[in-house]
Every structure is written in C-alpha cells, then in structure tokens.
Image (tube, rainbow, N blue to C red):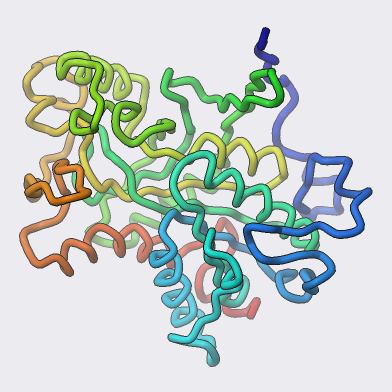
Length: 358
C-alpha cells in the first residue's frame, strides 16, 4: 500500500557559503557519477557529444515557457536588447535534433520551451538541471513565463507567483516514486519576486500583482471549466471552489508551477514564475452574483472582456483581448507578459548590466 513520505524540515535551499559565495547547480542523484556518458535525450545533447561547459558555462538566466514560438520570439527580443551582432532572425535552435523542446541561447540568457503540464515540464527540468550542472554554471536564475487563467483580476494582468499551491491550496508538490507519494516543498524565491514587482512599477500599462498560483493536472475539469468533454460539477460548485481559492490567496491557475518550484528549489536554483492572465476562470459577472464573493470585491474593472465565438478546438472562454483583428488578439495574449519581463530577467542584472556578460 502506498504511503506518504513527510516533507523534510530542512530548507530546500542550499547553503550559499558552501561554494565560496557561488551558487552551483546541484543534482540529487549519486548514480550520475558512475555513468560514462549522460545523454540528455529530449534536448539532443550529451556529455560526450557536446562540450557543455564551453556551450553553456556563461548562462546566468534561464527563461522557460510552454510554447516553442513564444520562446523563440523571446530569444529574438533578447538578442536585440543585448545588442548581439550575429544570429538575428536565423537564431539557432540548439534542440533541433529533437521535436520535443526548443532551446535558444542569446548571450547569458537561455530560452527553452517546456510544453504543457507537469509531466512535460518535469522531463525538461530534469535534463535542463543536469545540463547546467555538467556545464558548471553558477548563480543561475530560472524564470517561468506564460499565460494562465485568472481569478478575480483584470485582463492582461501579470501575476508574479509568491507561492505555488496544489488543488487543495497547499504549498506542496506530490510526486509518486515507485509506490510511494513523496511530498516536496514549493518554496519560491521571495526576494526575486519583490524585485520583479518593483521593476514592473516602472513600466506603464502592465497591471502587476504578487499572488499564489494554483497548479492543476488538467485544463478543463481540474480548473473548474464548464466547457470540456466531461463536466461532473455544477456552476454553483465551481463558483464556491473558486471563491475559496481566491480567499486562500490564489490569483491564477496553470499546470506547471508546483513541480517547477519543487525541482528548482531542491537543486539550488533561484526560481520565479511570472504569468500573464489570459482568461478569467471566474468572470467578473459570475463573481458579482454573490455580494460576498471576494473576487467581486477585489477585481479591477477590465477595459473590455469579450465572449469569443467558439471555434473548432477552442474553449470559448472569456478572452482578454480588446476588439480587433486576430493579430491584435495574439499580440495582446502573448507579447505583453514576455515584453516587460525581458527588461529585468534576474535579481542582479538589468539588460544594460547583462550586456557586460556577453
């Protein structure tokens, strides 16, 4: 019978003085030292086939996101902002030999896609962390950027995650290992969250807040959506659940944050998640049905929330874009969360300072 292993009381963060002030990337696997070669299968890299320290040893920032196209766009933007002479539109996908993920390097910034959901991002993180370890990188900051469903917040808002929680609003990630359920902390870097938040104050038209992010294993029923192929709950049950989530501090919902926080914390990486609100899981109209609904009291009035006509393959949820063309909607959804973040990609370096690392 499976049982739950209690979370350790020891801090997930390594002692910063262990390496003379440098924070190296840890791997928690004694068997790696016995291997002649470590093949990072899904990244199309390996310790014998590639000189990983030469390729990645200068990496200081890793930005990960679900979509390959978004991460390429982010890498191209960083390439321009850092003033790099070579590459440009022909920026190379380092993982071109596999169709699982994409990876782009622009100076000290690594941009990687991770797909959708906990299983997909966890595979990428295992191999990314080993890559940073083999490359002997130090003082690395990892930031996840993406879209999410909002709870009682304005369209286009940027949520900086202070705590990743599960579907029971608990700050933990449960991993099934053999026939055991292992509970791991989802502690995130508080100082980095505050620094990113302070940075956002200097950029207009980007409503930004710090809040809890809830991670689910499903896009439809797991996120209380009513438009999936299956729906085993009522609209009233949905609203009650989302009100309790809001009261617990949850401001957005996605599908990667808990494992991201747990794995980065265990391996000594300074981590942070930043999400743009793509849709409101609990719309303002629904929240307003109850005068006591916390999201009805606290939600900022959006400039416009439109019902997007259902299309094949679409969810038909409330969209966050203003009236306009498909291109305008796409820009509103994908560019805004990435654009402001790129002005300050870590706790120590601004774009101007990052140029010195190139």
